[in-house]
Each structure stands twice: as structure tokens, then as C-alpha cells.
Length: 239
Image (cartoon, one colour):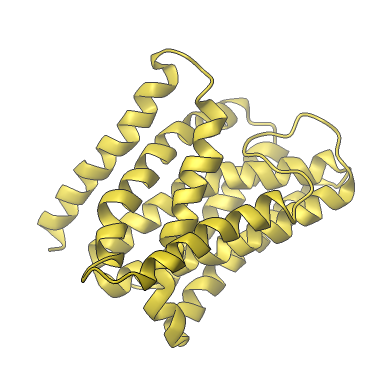
């Protein structure tokens, strides 16, 4: 299974999300917004059930340091070094530099999306595919986020799509670096676990947790259930 192809497919999610924003595709935007809860459930299940047991295999302590580093690194890039950031459509006018700072912060995160895919494939094809799906599910709202921020800063549609493409390229770069840099190949999975955990639990879940009822609970639990179903199918077909 080629990690670069999976990286390119994941990168396409950024561009798709951006196109939905710049073309004002209401139904597409509603679908992507609904996927936030589903993606959060899927990502949490991937990290807690699929990735962390691999990271802590053998009981070593050091991998936990890298998990924390990934988690805190995303917080620094998105909520300390970035002026304005939240997942979803930006509905208020922002300064032009807010879009640029968000692009820088999300590019660092996107780099580790690629690391996650490549590092997962180094463990097993099944884990690589599961991590690819987890990445792709949040790439769609991520594309919406960066495109709407760029346009809210007064930039045109071309620059909004270009910003989403930059995030996609960062993902592919993460794949390539993991294949060529021994430290990333060795510790990339632990770093990616922290990054994915942060995006799922600290970015996506807060976007819908204030809403009561089954409208968001069902997609959230459905995302977790989809992980177990996909895992079982991959075990049968790939394993």
C-alpha cells in the first residue's frame, strides 16, 4: 500500500472542503459539519484502541513523552501561535494575518497527519488505512476552516483554495519525511497519537458538545462504531 497515494487522497480532503466554502455549497457544508461529530468518534477510537496499544507495546515510558509532545505541540500551533482558530465556518470578519497565522499552525498539524499515515503503515496496512480514514475525516472540516478564514480576511476564492492546497502538501511532505527520516519512522506514531488525540478531543468535540440530544450523539457514537466495523473488515480482507 503506497503511503504517498494515501497522503494525496487525504490532501484532497482539504481542497474539497475549501471548494465547498468558496462555491457556497450549502448541502455540502451541512454534510461536512455533520461529519465533525462522526470524525471525532472515529479518531478517538483509532487513537485509544488502535494506536496507543502499539505505542506503549513493551511498557516503555519514553513513548508517552512523545504522545504528550504531539498533544501540546498542536495546542501551541493552533491556540498560542495562531491568532484566531476554531473548526467550522468563520462567520465574522477577521484580520488578513489571522488567516496566515492559522495556515502556519494548521500546516504543522497537517505535517503530522502525513506522519500518522506513513508511521501507521510501517506497523501494519490495517493501522495505516485506519489512520488515513481518521485523517481524511477531519481534512474536510479543516479545508472549510482555512478557506473561510482566508476569505473572512478579505482574500479571494483562489487564495482560499490555495491555502487548503498548502495544507494538503504539508500532509504529503509528512509522509515523505517519515519514509526518509529514521527518528520520525521510530517515534512518528507516538507523536501522531498525541496530535490525533488533540484534534479529536480538544478541537472537534468542543464544536458539538454543547448541543443536547441525539443529533450529534448518534454521529459521534457512530464514528466509534465505524472504527470497529472497519477494523474487523480490514482484519478479514488485509490480514
